[in-house]
Length: 434
Image 1 (cartoon, rainbow, N blue to C red):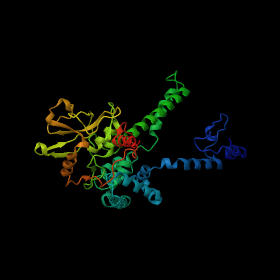
Image 2 (cartoon, rainbow, N blue to C red):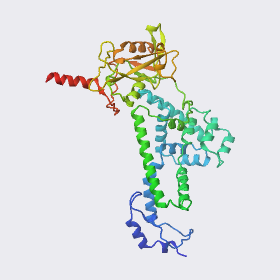
Image 3 (cartoon, rainbow, N blue to C red):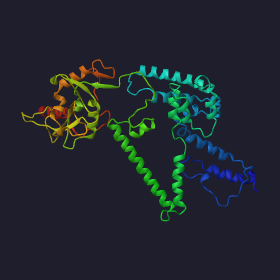
Image 4 (cartoon, one colour):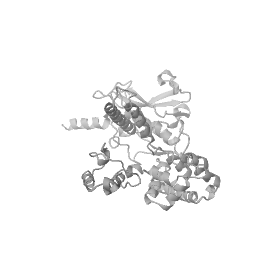
């Protein structure tokens, strides 16, 4: 039997020192499994200083990726008594910073643009959380029952299920935050399941698919899926859709988005610029532009107004399908504000609806009294009736021209495949000067 001194000689240590690269570089000494390595007794085995040094470097390299904010907060809110005592004795300032970031990210509404209000809301929530965490660790207040802590000691108890039953309804911040962070998949279960699938290839269950071919296919498939996901998220972000359906499921919302993370007072949830902005004066080809449709619907979708021409009847616009591509005309009978120029003969009109309109049917197949198409560059009355309707609203803030900046599509990096009116005017001015 070899001892640790015999197995880790000075020569082996010198060879180990030559290979000093982080993961991702050339293979290290741990990846080279020699078939002639002698068996080492587990009771006498002692890793060499080089091995311990390499492990420390690898841990420092992967630590930021493993200890995310969700992991740190889940560690603080784990109901197992052993973990609670360990967290009390090993308090890390980075854990406190992670709590601060997550509370502001998950609980403070993103629609609140006032920095002072955001800071005050975040401070109150953070103070309430630390108060509830103190009672949680000391087993006081709503956590004084011995029965719930008896269940927390069981290894089969799931943290998110325990918090859902005993803390969600009795706390304001801690329970909701605990249910979110402890239900995240922070382990390597997915990797283990993928390895099981790969193992079935290696043992010969699919003889024609060898290890090398499997590795190549897996690498190509993973790279393609990652690239496709990145492009989809970029396209959704450019169109103003920062969230997807899967994101709502992660936040514990159902199919109807029911289940607020934290009840809060009503605040301004929408800002409406009550004038026709420059980016709206754009003409397109017959193909239109999906990005423009999304931005147009984001501004005008879901608005309501009282139409004076129809005896004060309430009109409204659909949430995500209120942009209709129409043709530009120069003739006196059908003349439009945006005239056709240089092959760009189409513009987007606003579809407004009235009581009785069926959103499941095309507007052209319904009675004309139930809908109307408005060319916004020439419909100043629309902004007046919308401003009047939301004059005393607490949820919609209406700004008039000059009170706030316009939306800049170029600054937001949202390309519109069309021709702006300002570009045409600048070209005509250049021709006049010549």
